[in-house]
View (cartoon, rainbow, N blue to C red):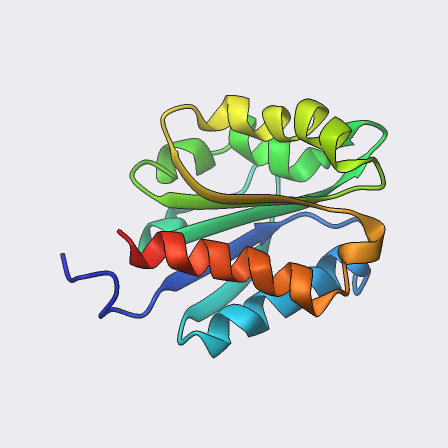
Length: 156
């Protein structure tokens, strides 16, 4: 396998969003643009609970993100981890997580990230972030998340 620092990152953003063009999707687009600025190749795909995720094997990093609705991670992303081949396709992949939510960050870290992480035991999580409403369009906060993800990837 080639050195990660010499090979551009190939990242896929798997996401769920209740509304097309909403705040979560805008955040995803910004994350993708900032990653592309680092030289990464980035694609995005909306999650479906029963989809076929064989294509994630073509990517170095799988970024998974969703909004929180009624105290739960959006159902399509969790459903994909439980009902499809996504979990098996993530084997050996580096994973980054993010959630958008209106709760204070500490509460969100205690309640919501574990909903995803319980389904990713044994996976390598290289970055994670809870985005509060005031951070969804904040270039510095988004940039810090992308920098953390990119640095973790290039370190191997």
